[in-house]
Length: 144
Image: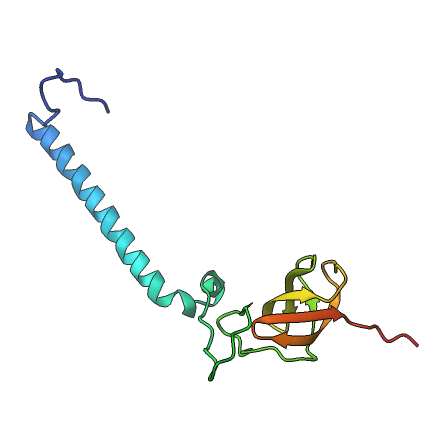
């Protein structure tokens, strides 16, 4: 509701009804803000534990011992996959031209294709791991 007032006066409540509306408006605003702060606090604390909402937050990766670099990968919070190894097989989840992402078990890893561009869904095998660089090649299908 717009309050009609002259330019030199503030639109301040003048009677008891206006003060009552103003007070309830301020109380409603304060309760809404307080409720928002409480909900955000609870979500930040318990979000990883709620099964259907756990995908909204990423779990930190476990640092390796020694000087080797960490392979760039993302896993769900409940995953037990900590690393990938040479010889692991997976499936391309984004086109490799020549870099992209591939899924190995539950882990999605940044990879580089050896030579060829590979389309989504192509089965690949890890052939090299140099620091944080994972090199893959198209997996040979056994026909016979």
